Amino acid sequence: MRLLGLDKDCFSTWWAKLPEGSTIVVQPKIDGCAIGLRYKYGQLVEAYSREDSVIIENIRNINAIPLNIDESLKVEVELEGVLFSPNTNSNISIDQLLSNSISTIDNNNSLLFFAFQIFCSNSDELSDLTRLQNWGFEVPITLRTDDPRQVKRWHSQWIKNELFSNLPTNGIVAKCNSSLTKNVLGFSASSPNWAMALTR
Image 1 (cartoon, rainbow, N blue to C red):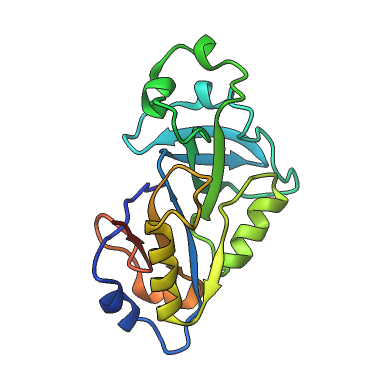
Image 2: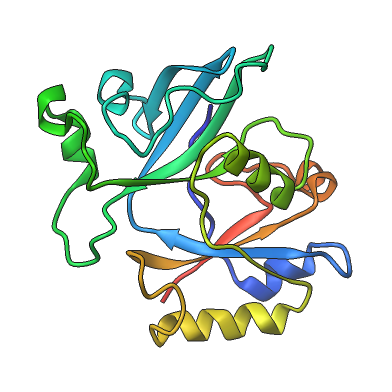
């Protein structure tokens, strides 16, 4: 698992690299802590933060993260999501919370987890989100369009606090839906080339 960041390059430049008519999915960029999870035969076996810290024991005590998914899975599944406080006025530091003792976060009901990526998947973005939901995860609100002007409009709405206003966000994320295009674009050393962040 590589928990990468997101590029903040010019949106028009990024869009121009995509095949004509590409479907783009847009999600809130949640202000939280990126978490990688590994499931083996449907059982949660490992959890990591972006700093490569092993946090499995603390993660097991967060109700928003399922300990078991599809038990019929015969392979390991690795996925990424974000752990956050739904209270937009909260001063809670998720990173500090995860470094505390297990008792501090035992049965913590104040945190939410949105899963948004299955590593090494050959399915498109929307299909993966449906699969994550079927496994019991919450997923981000997801919009879709093939019009770059619509992405710009959504970004303007977010800046005006008219979009995703019920979540703690620091931008929106645009992603290519097609698995084929994602494979062609690949990754840089620090971010996927098929996704980018639009911030203030």
